[in-house]
Image 1 (cartoon, one colour):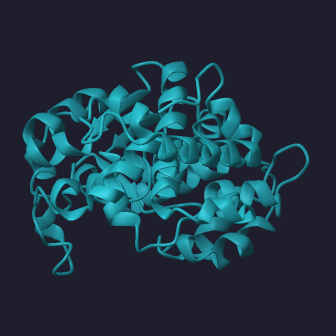
Image 2 (cartoon, rainbow, N blue to C red):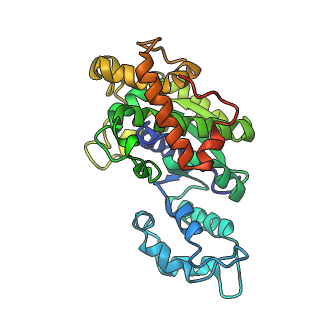
Length: 313
């Protein structure tokens, strides 16, 4: 049971923070907050040799990253993880950071919650092949309600004026893409390393959902996961599970629902989420197909996620 032990991923605004807090409440598992530095710093290669080993130059970049600062790990704690005569790989160095964080939290197993890694699971598996993946999936229409007033982190989309003309379809396609990439990677990982959780099951049937999570993680079941809010340090963090915070049926206009379903209806069908508009207008379907093609043309990696699939809704 080496660290990183588990990664919690999913389309942003799907409830991954809630899942993180529930798993973190387990007496054997610590889940560190979002860590985009894991892939950002590796991509920048600052402090990483051409052979993939780590040098001390990586430490200032780590300490300057705002997300890493939330861990409370100091320079004096990081230096011994590299050592004067050691040349650990980047994957091994990050593993030692996880171990250190677990020691600070008094737990042996350490995971991480970074939603965006759902689009990079092949990279995660390459570096940490024994890490388990929990992919949280939520009805995309409720995800849209949560994300519509927040910036959508997609540099690819900003290059295409047509992509910004319809924020509902944009949100639908971004949700669909995240789910598609996560599920496609999950098929290659297999059931020992990959597990899907529905947000709706998590909030409506938490006891059963937590029991199944513990089975997947191979840890004893713990009621502490259901009482995660007892350790909350703010009013919001102390709030217990509240089903129905987002409800597309009552909080989303009929026009927006049809737009969303015209773009991501096939994925809703695949996941078993019922549509309000089984047959959206041909005009909306045509626009959605055009927008999806813009997205796929912007990134070969995204296009590979749809290989063999028809561009239909």
